[in-house]
Amino acid sequence: MKSQYNKPINIGPLPEPEFSLTLSKVASAQICQSMGFKAAQNSALEVLTDIATRYLKAIAMLAVDSANSFGRTESNLLDIIVALEDLGSVRGFRGGSDTKVRTLYESQVIRDLMVFVKYNDEIPFAQPLPRKMISRSIKGNFTKYRGDVDNNNWYWSEEKIMHVPRWLPFMPVMGGEEKVEERKGKSNRKWGCLDGGFEGEGEKSLCRGKLVEREGSKEIELLGYREKVRFKLGVDVSVGIVGNLRGRECRGGGIGKRVLCNDWNGSGDSKDDENKRMKTAMNKRSR
Amino acid sequence: MNAQSSQQQPNDGRHDDDAALTDFLASLMDYTPTIPDELVEHYLAKSGFQCPDVRLTRLVAVATQKFIADVATDALQYCKARQSAVVKDKRDKQQKDKRLILTMEDLSKALQEYGVNVKHQDYFADSPSAGLDPVARDE
Image (cartoon, rainbow over all chains, first blue to last red; front, side, top):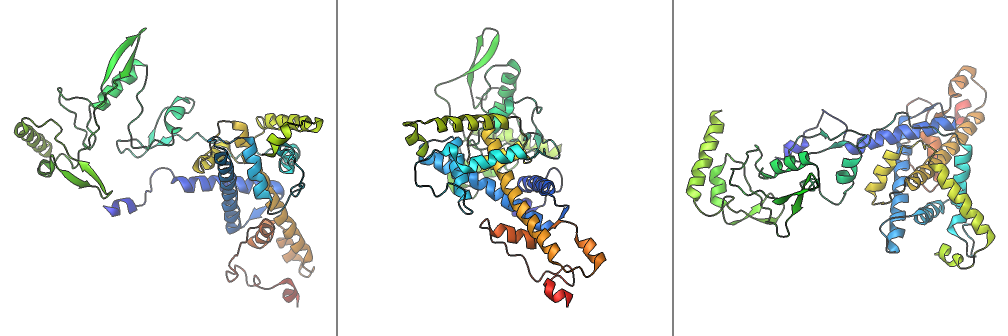
């Protein structure tokens, strides 16, 4: 199994850290060029890039820290000024040693920035960048281009929710008839069925909702009580293993969590069910 | 913080500073930093920074750009100083050296002022005279 992950991926875009590092490298090279350098050693440029990214991250982390210490989650201008003063204290700045009370607004750090912006020509980045548009979909298609760049809707609805792990299904879409239908189709699919087998007609869908007609647009109204989400271990072909594990606890996937393996179709007529599965498996093999 | 404590006793200077700062932030909307917004947002998000304001993202970008520009300027000065220190011995070689190239040597000197200690590999010689100092070279 491990060798699967160790395989180098030679198709598609660069892995993310490398990509962002390359971009920062171009940016720092541009800055060096604007300062009067004609060329640069590769190693020196790499060091400079590394320091640029570290500096950026340090500003962000200090700003986050200062925001959190005041009980806020969003940082503001003052946090950034505090962070810049912290980072500038290595070299020192005018007024940094003042003991009298002064406002952060009149900090020398920010004034230096004003002067910098005023007297330096702006050098835009060499190439316009697309917004982050590559994302992994659940089904295992490695990269999938979702929507067009101009449509900011998906950006806010999915990519911006950083705390939700990517492997979870999408949030229910409210409104829009087409999307509702699509979601219904997806919900009929079992998780863990890698070969994408659809459930029978009598099957209960995982995220059931009432379709409500409201002023011409269909919407899903989520029920107050929802069923538990259950996972099924094993692939469809290995019917025997799944059958043996049914109704018992088993250790799953090396994560160390206990997963309850339940029968998907209820406890009744399990024999018929097994027969059905065997038949489908045989059919698939014969294909 | 300092800002809050001085809000109780406002003076005229503070209003000027406020106005200047507001203008500066507004001017950042039109200013395009060399480090693109997308890249800055990526790194900010990675560090847990949350702020919907584009101006603050630009401010961080400008601050980073200024830092790199300062380092580069210092390195440039070191480079120029090193080149002028070379005794005018070999004309053709000097012409070749006259190009301003960002090297590890100058960069590590410049970074030392900013509290970054870079050790480059001394034994990695890309030219036969790389390890020799200028005094030894002209003898």
